[in-house]
Length: 95
Image (cartoon, rainbow, N blue to C red; front, top):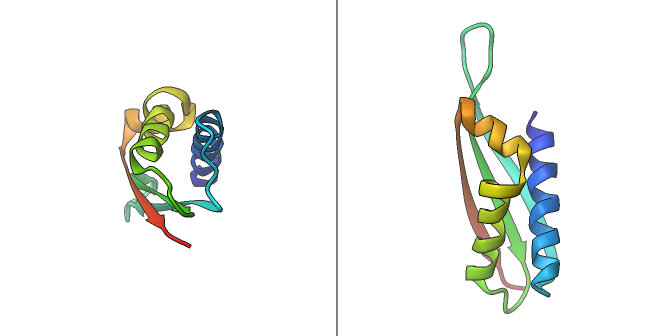
């Protein structure tokens, strides 16, 4: 489940950034999730961390690409948001 979400949103973000002519040197998507203790065990909250590395990366465009993925394009995220809390953050690291 978590791998599907990471792959879906990562492909969206990179595709959107490519159209904006923005190419980070490195891009990673990390997923943190809270699993319930009771059975059947399931995820109750997912947090996505988008980590961009590069110089002169415009934060507002990175945010726009991530928001488009989360709100419009990523079907996996869309489905998960119907059943649990899905949050995200963006981290930008200079080279």
